[in-house]
Length: 346
Image 1 (tube, rainbow, N blue to C red):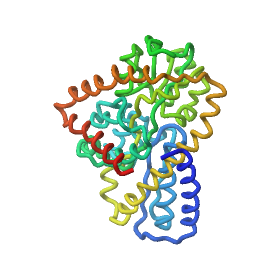
Image 2: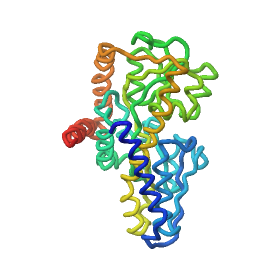
Image 3: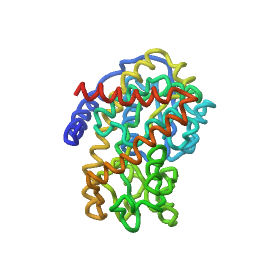
Image 4: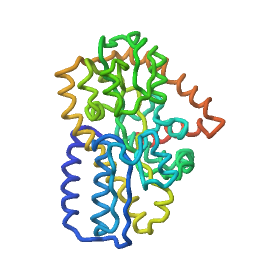
């Protein structure tokens, strides 16, 4: 989906939602209050869930209320799964690379150079993967059920100091990057660090970090990375991760069927709003980046070299490391199968 299409979708969606706000209650049921744990401030990643909370309350006449607690009020980001396991709250955002040992199958989302560059394909693949047995099983161990993907855009990198205009320039750099993306950076000679997003700006200020990979462009601004950086990459597109939304299984199973249906019926709406918010952020942020920072672009030859050394070797290493615990090969193959189906459907 192109930027103009996403921006048009934002306007159209706003019209639909505005019309909805004038409608009366359509779903009856008991009083329910859900707490949703999230780190950081409201931003594009959370826009869809904020809208879900509004829609759910409206459609139930105020009987079903959801509140997103920001800034780690309920739990630190790496501990959201633990909170779900003990029923501390009813839902949470999770970032897979904050706790790879807790969600090993989910780390497939963070492998480098997966066929997820097209937003429409990415959305279709992630939606199907959220129902894959291995992905569901990861959450069951934490009393959680997958709800909807955060649809994080491809990552790009911002950094301080000399810009790595050649692949050799990454050697020795301390780079905030998680999962398979971090492994890919290590192949280039960088040192991988997996700081929580909220601590990254401070790490730059203290001189403890040279570069940071974040979803392009909204997350760099959300966490103030652009205020610390001297340069940014714009076409590296090494991969992404999954910062998605999951529900407490005990709480979800206790909902009346009409409330469960209301949540599931609005998954597309959540993703529509989220993707439109990313597109709006890009339109605003990219000109600012180009005005204040040095833009690093790589040649097709450089990118091909990067994919050769940091693509398939990282994939195979991940599969071999996890095949004994779950069907890692089958899950990896499913990514490509779903992507091929989505591309054919376009």
